[in-house]
Image (cartoon, rainbow, N blue to C red):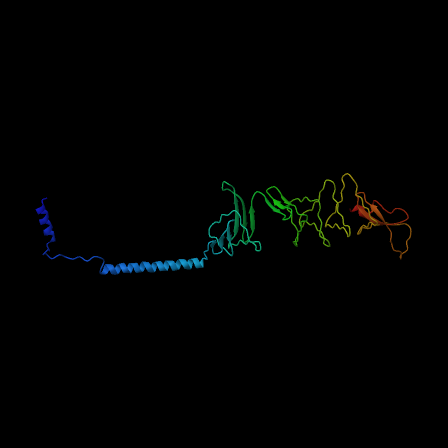
Length: 299
């Protein structure tokens, strides 16, 4: 480009334009501006409401740096104070109460505690319901708090009571449907001991003997029909200062010697029939027992 051409070109650019130039405003005007202000105001109100709700929730739920409400997060775990309600299963390793308050588990229906192995199989279950307390496990034990001694244990084979004394306070006593093996049965002081079978027989057996002792009272054996004392190899020994046999029948004896009509028979002779039945016969000078007595004939 020559110098003359450059000067002509620059002079043409500096000349004022004669045509009418259209001017366009810069920015947002009209209804768009009003809508923008409205949305900005709505966003500001929403932020204020959210901030107020957040502050209210933090105040109501009692959020702190240690936890929320009655729930506190400590180094040893989670500490929960007051009454709590769990709507879903709770999985924990240990549950402890405060030292000065008990631990209460409450439910409208029942409280169930399950124990599972590493495979998730149920190994033990304790259910506290409205009607009963059920425990399902291989072995159930109750131990003492002092020495850890087993006080009560139960499994499929046997039930063991390890307490020093078993006390039954029911009015009907204890009912056993099968045999009972025990080395000692004793009543409380100043109380009676009663062994009863209302509709069947009562059997006490021991290979080395059965001893019944009443150190400060009487021993009574009462039956409706027959009382049998049997010794297969030994003897029946009655050792007492006085032995009485009451309500024995009295046999008849006719004496040839005359007796006074006003005399009263006070001495009798104890007689035995061939079948072993005992009866009384009026004592005389000699033996008055007769095998032809009416007692022996009808026995």
